Length: 369
Picture 1 (cartoon, rainbow, N blue to C red):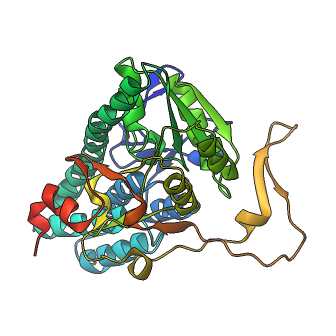
Picture 2: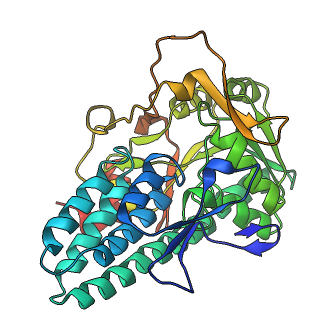
Picture 3: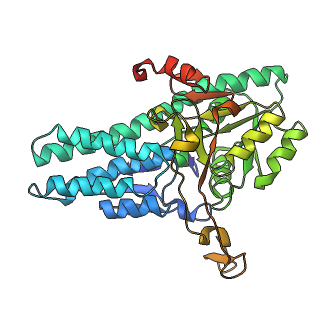
């Protein structure tokens, strides 16, 4: 996608040095566009854990490249022990996103197929590229399928702008390119369908305010930033035509785990008869879980993310400011689970499906049994 008119992905191997993987360091957005070089699996783990990168698809792609970097750090004698530890360290960084484990397991299987150290390194590099390219292509296809939903609403409105509410950032910054929830929006825009996006700020990390609003600005998509608790009011007054969100883990029965606050938006949409869509690449499915409330692990993060807020100060530096009394007890759940019964449809690279086991398996029949 575009930044100041230039095309970027969120992660890519350095053209000058294939032992270096480059990322957009999202901690500094929207105030600074900063690229970070990663050289070791330890640096990759830190980048994932400390939110230099975030979003289900991008976390998976970053873990894929992290496994490749791990193969460069070890000699043949210690290879198996080191790689298994690297896999465990990467998997432990963020517990909720399914793409992370999926990418690590895919790399482990691919590496095991090669006998020589050089072969393992080449295979790991190739698979990391495959994971990234698939993520981008799957998101592009999500856009093509989701565009038809937006087009249908546009026709009903006589061509008036379609108002779409989203939560957190499920844009290209959360994936390798295109995004999941934003892909239909970009595809509709490119097809000449007028759209307007209501952007939730998304406390406590403010990914909506910092990332989605910045991304839509760079793409020239009309949007309005609102406080997290505004969505229900907008729906009650007929100002939202549909909700599209992403997901970090989706069960085989259609429950989804997404950024904290998603469940409340789904309840408000249900109460107001507004369609609620979830966009996801298939790497986000957890085929071993049906009940999301019982089975999806919910990440808990530092309470400082709730008691403090970061922004650009008058000194042009990014500073943290306390917004709660000292020593306030906190609970910082990063995700919640939206039950399938509140979801109108799921949108994946294979098409649009009902949010239930029958609907999902109709598009993914190889997962039956």
